[in-house]
Length: 162
Image 1: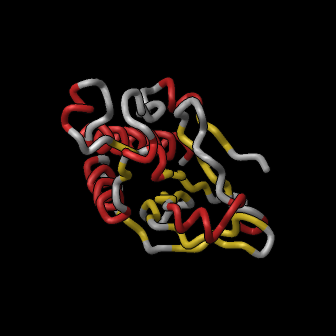
Image 2: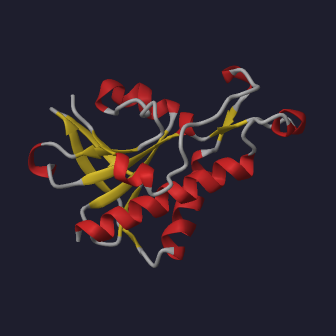
């Protein structure tokens, strides 16, 4: 399968790859979906974009995804991908890009004009231990700031497409 990657957005300053410089993966925590979607909503408000109605998009033959957030009444959406989403949709949702680029999941079939920003929980992990943060691990505030930047970059991309 082919997924759109947006290196142009990476160059604009997206959050970059998740750091786990001092902590093992099992010690890191991901933002909760509730917190992530709150941050998405705040970034959209800051960017002057209203939230539209949820919608489903075809992502594979006989497979659809209920998108978490629609940007106003546009063809653009944002999906927080949790571990459960990965179990539910398998390979239909791409793994996070290794270089930290923002990742867009295009719709399929009749939905081919729809573009959904994939925000994978694995990219937004932090170390809850202050001593590890002092040693270079990502803090919760750093991860939240990265998520906001990624949404802001996606909003800029969408403006350029309209």
